Amino acid sequence: MGKVAVLGIFVADAAFRADRMPVMGETILGNSFALGPGGKGSNQAVAAAKMGAEVAFISALGADAFAQMARDMWTKAGVTPVIREIADSYTGAAFIYVDEASGDNAIIVSPGAAGLVGPQDIERARADIESAAVFMTQLEQPMDAAMEGLRVARAAGVTTLLNPAPAAELSREMLALCDYITPNETETEAIAGVAVTDAESAKTACAALKDMGVGVPIITMGAQGVYLDGHGMIPAINAGKVVETTGAGDAFNGGFAAALAEGKSAREAAQFGCVVAGISVTRPGAASSMPTRAEVGALL
Ligand code: RIB
Ligand code: NA
Image (cartoon, rainbow, N blue to C red; front, side, top):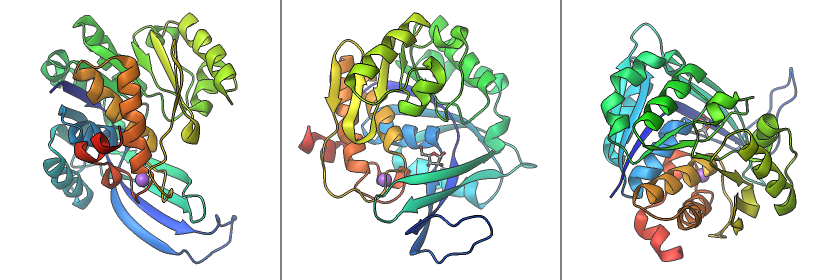
């Protein structure tokens, strides 16, 4: 069992299923609604914990009903919260449009209190980061917190993993602190300026990312699977009908981090992450759709 420290945000996901998106000024009837736990970092933390990792989750929450939802859910999943409570802010939320036919989504996320996380929160969590096998973060909380987290982890010899979502341009300084980076196609283009559509273009993008200082790039490519630098395409698995893809990238990252923390190779860890993600898309919700270790084991 390996230790994983995750910096990121929790938000409540308000997911609306409908046949199409409304246009500006229009009201349409949706097919269903669900409120559940989300936020990329928290989803990744939950996925890693369900895979058996010992997980510390570094973030901030408001003092409200959504914060309670987060705490209850982490207790159930076995995630240890390393949380600053900011009573005069609020726990964030995400508006999620889920396309009924494809299960694909479009998201607006407002981080609330977690948007105030900064380098002081890394200082507060220093012991959790330094004692971890893997440190993982994303870009939903402020960039300076991510930078500081990566710096502290790197200085302590902890393996660093950046899931650069949502898409942003990144400094070379930041990229050089990443042992692994896991952008999807859009995020890859934002960072490296290379459009990714297939294995060939993914290989070109990986070379560009390595030139920018990244250790090992892994490009997540949805239904195609992931392109692991030096190994090529690792295909996605088909675990049934796709119901909702929200959190699929998080499932991959959480599974990948947990497997790395256990001492698995990058290739084994990527295969493991693909199975976690493949199961998650057959279920509604983000954190709620993460499988158990036994379910993953059955499909590996
Ligand atoms: O990666 C999926 C997540 O992104 C959702 O849970 C939503 O909260 C957004 O942060
Ligand atoms: Na899902």
